[in-house]
Length: 616
Ligand SMILES: *[C@@H]1O[C@H](CO)[C@@H](O)[C@H](O)[C@H]1NC(C)=O
Ligand SMILES: *[C@@H]1O[C@H](CO)[C@@H](O)[C@H](O)[C@H]1NC(C)=O
Ligand SMILES: *[C@@H]1O[C@H](CO)[C@@H](O)[C@H](O)[C@H]1NC(C)=O
Ligand SMILES: *[C@@H]1O[C@H](CO)[C@@H](O)[C@H](O)[C@H]1NC(C)=O
Ligand SMILES: *[C@@H]1O[C@H](CO)[C@@H](O)[C@H](O)[C@H]1NC(C)=O
Ligand SMILES: *[C@@H]1O[C@H](CO)[C@@H](O)[C@H](O)[C@H]1NC(C)=O
Ligand SMILES: *[C@@H]1O[C@H](CO)[C@@H](O)[C@H](O)[C@H]1NC(C)=O
Image 1 (cartoon, rainbow, N blue to C red):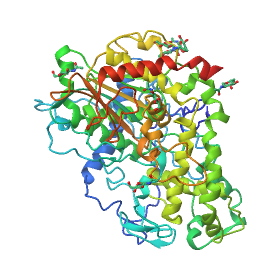
Image 2 (cartoon, rainbow, N blue to C red):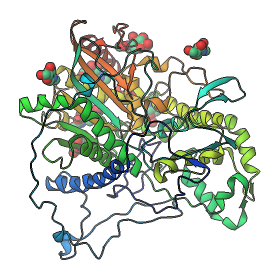
Image 3 (cartoon, rainbow, N blue to C red):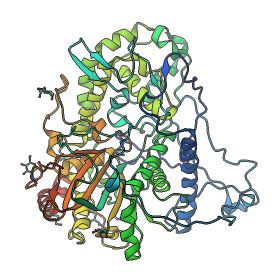
Image 4 (cartoon, rainbow, N blue to C red):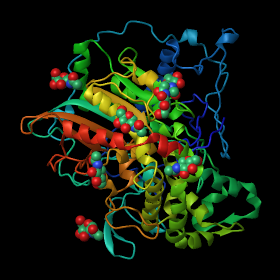
């Protein structure tokens, strides 16, 4: 049951057969007033307690609703979490518990047979809803004077340390960096590569001095939205690092070592993380994203009303993918979302054609030695940037040798514990410079594993590209010669063409495959990435391109000032230059004529040879 999984690419099959939306370990979370921890951020508070509780509650409701709704239509094979108080055997509770392979402390919730569960006494619909007149849809992208940005990590959920590597500092401070050479606006939560929670990219950061809001004289006619799942536990497999391995090493013979000083906390520390599942914070990310997209683009739903249709959103069967889509839907449509859209759940498993999980049919990509190409680079880079940290931390640990890989794993524990448990003592062990090094280690991993430095990245992105072009041109896919699935793609119900709104959910590796396939070469400008040092001003940063809940807005526009339909690509609220795409002009708002864009993408599709890249 336990598959091998790359970063998260599910190299062979990372299905965790659990239906638990997330587990909620009861951990001893110190009060936010505890001296070493500050409030999660000093940026403007965005949401109060009520909002947050609502997110949690609605999140759980969403999952329950989804289970019932989907099981009802037979498209969902796993049994719902229900209880069988008065029930017959067929109504039996079936909760498949996750494997918890590496956890040294586990809290199983919900119990498999709760004694007080009487669903019949808690009907889900009792009527008497009161008045329900609706108003008009929001259109922030077109109407608001400014575009609301997302600080990402805040929401008062995640705590950060006030000390790093033994030095007290204030978050967001412009601090002397490293050996005093340069100044930086350091943000710990933005230094975690693919493990960063997504945040809005500053205007101009990608080289286009424009924002996501509709450019002057233009209006938005459609949106293709592509996003990643929210924060998750570590994946089941890692060829370098792997937080569970550190827990195992530490707990193999606890009597044989003793920690002191900065590592004193290890004496009582347990490894509390599960595997693969969305965390409560991850649930909130998608719920928030759903709300935010509804407020920005809700007006696009009018097209569906006019045509008497509802949208089709897509995600995959993997637990965190489905849970992410459900949380997005509860945010976007509200409770209950039944009848407002149709959720396509494509199968993510070996041998199934799936553009959102292309590695499942591309042996060369899932070949472990290739998938861990990036890890080869990390291992070399870690020897350099973690040398001092290894010596420093070893001083506080008697009886157990810390390897460089162990120290890298301790760094991984900071983001993983933070997004799962709310904070992590591991964060404060490292300096700003070491966090920059960690961020770069992940850039190396993905550059060589999933993006411009990978021989199979473009190939894996091309299936989604074919679908995208089919949607843009209202023309069915002609040849199924990549990861596309003719059963789903050739059916206008499961794969509608020419809609004004699409939402697809996938993994960070696939987002990077697609960015590579699209030929967004701006992000490749400072490559190939060396493992000897961090290049200055590198344009490829995984924390910016593929963090948790990363999201791409493909905006379709019509403008009075520019002839013909236009397209723009906005990555995490940063407008991406399209000038690497053949024929796309340098345009101040980052727009390219749709026909030019389509022509270039067709050329890319025709150049890619799936059979050769994946099998030969
Ligand atoms: C296409 O997708 C459907 C639905 O998920 C699945 O049943 C079928 O096996 C897939 N086809 C291929 C060739 O993978
Ligand atoms: C693809 O896999 C085959 C068989 O495992 C191997 O011989 C070939 O070199 C691989 N091709 C690439 C481009 O990695
Ligand atoms: C699955 O993908 C393969 C390889 O591209 C293709 O030959 C086959 O027709 C596809 N099957 C379906 C049902 O789309
Ligand atoms: C959606 O509706 C708007 C307003 O009527 C229209 O301008 C736009 O072209 C429509 N988009 C699609 C994809 O039909
Ligand atoms: C990096 O960017 C800064 C500020 O834009 C610039 O001054 C510097 O020359 C750049 N360095 C390189 C190596 O491109
Ligand atoms: C893709 O990018 C490369 C390198 O910048 C460029 O030479 C090529 O023309 C581009 N191709 C397309 C179809 O955009
Ligand atoms: C796959 O089909 C597309 C047309 O849909 C074509 O442009 C491309 O050349 C084909 N690729 C291969 C390897 O046959």
